[in-house]
Image (cartoon, rainbow, N blue to C red; front, side, top):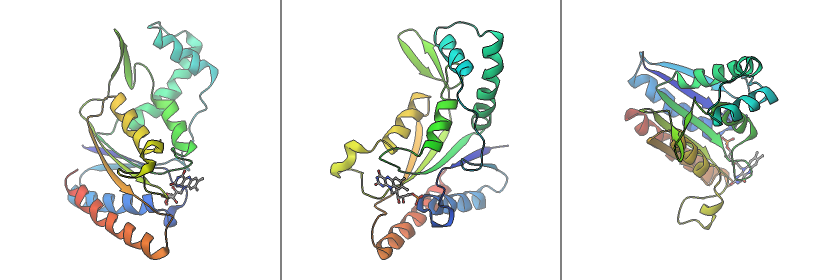
Length: 208
Ligand SMILES: Cc1cc2nc3c(=O)[nH]c(=O)nc-3n(C[C@H](O)[C@H](O)[C@H](O)COP(=O)(O)O)c2cc1C
């Protein structure tokens, strides 16, 4: 069965613009694909392991193309469990706010747990190679200001550009986006931008 994982990052729930757009996308996706499984991972409701010293030792060991000792292998199981939950999906939908020009720390925590050698990427002659092949991603970002070109702020968008880079680093080639911006505006402008993006989300879901 086709499986989609939805990773939700905003804690603002019913006030969140990124979640409102993601929910419109998922409702339309569900209607078009009633037999697909959707796994929702709310990062405010998901206990992620700390990236402890044994995991970090394991990471360096794998980067050195070495094998793990027992302590490292045991710790690595917690990394693999989170990675496997995300990687068991055929498609990924991520909705996230921008916080301080980047992603909220809850998402960075997930990133630091799952972007790992031998799981998300391989160490190869001369560099790294993404291991996640043939999957599709939809990235829904919300931010207070406008960052998309021709905005002067494009260079300080360490949120969407970072996510796009990471996904391509681990092998994704089909990366789509819905950009909800600028949202620190008047209530009327916010409502208009949100409504426009909800329509775009419905159309995007039909093609996802
Ligand atoms: C802790 C925090 C930091 C923020 N930092 C930025 C920022 O650096 N740039 C920006 O444009 N908006 C910033 N914002 C505004 C949010 O990105 C904006 O309100 C967005 O709609 C939040 O997404 P959400 O509605 O899905 O929660 C910040 C908001 C919070 C709560």
